[in-house]
Image (tube, rainbow, N blue to C red; front, side):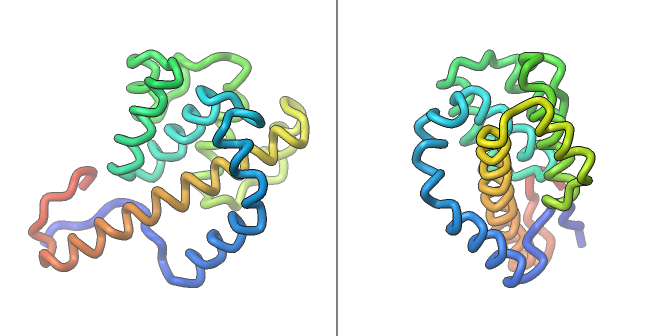
Length: 163
């Protein structure tokens, strides 16, 4: 039987924790999605950086498309989905590196990493970045969890991208 090698929600409690954290800040979602707290291209770069770590095929597709609409060049979208940030704007690099660390640690970032983020951006921007990261991580893990269920129902025979 094949293995499933993508991050999923380990339990309902972890999902509910993420859901509650996002709902507690739902008033900040509209300004974020309208590009009022983060420029659309910046937000999409963050989404792609986290998605590259988590490997969600649904989010990869959706956010690659949104990134192109936001004016990000195809080559940069490809590098972000490959897990590298070298083609991204220099002013966004601290946030993109933080996003990768955030995803790798499932939000349990080192205090020193958050302190460096606060050196690069004001508190409102940092909060918008972190809300973006939690939101895309939740989407990634939900997509991957769905794929895991499909994988298990097929007894591991289903060829899933990313495996």
